[in-house]
Length: 226
View (cartoon, rainbow, N blue to C red):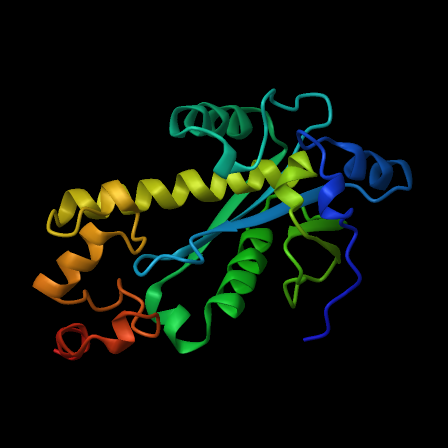
């Protein structure tokens, strides 16, 4: 896929906090509404990749929006509620481990973003996607913005929705099966998680069998095939 020219500033010029400047310029030229898009869960060994799309109300932007990775879990939870209460539209979508294994994590992340946008109650005129790639099949103009969750509050809001949604999914899975500790590591390759895989094997359709070290673990592969 051809990558479009990015609107991203040089990395050394990243602002301290994201703002509404890109969105305001788009609105001034008639590109309304603007949707921010981001994903969570590209790196874990288990669980879905989750993407979100958010159309903020320019007159009701919650204070404190930022890259979800720079916020505490408690702050993310508070902002999740604030975004859902004030935004004009919010949508999230996920692709499971089997779908990730069937393609690759990059394609799955972009497809999750596309599905999140398709779920919005208002159709965007412009999309702002975190990263280097524009999701295919959107049906509207979209700009890819590297480090977009530190530049655009719309993308930051989407990053929070995606992260909190995914964490809650993994915490629920941890409640259902306490062997792996998903509620603590959210599926990432911690020592606890890798030890659990070694002891109990991989869970079909939950663990990503194309990810190292799972594709190198005979016990995990045998468990997934059963």
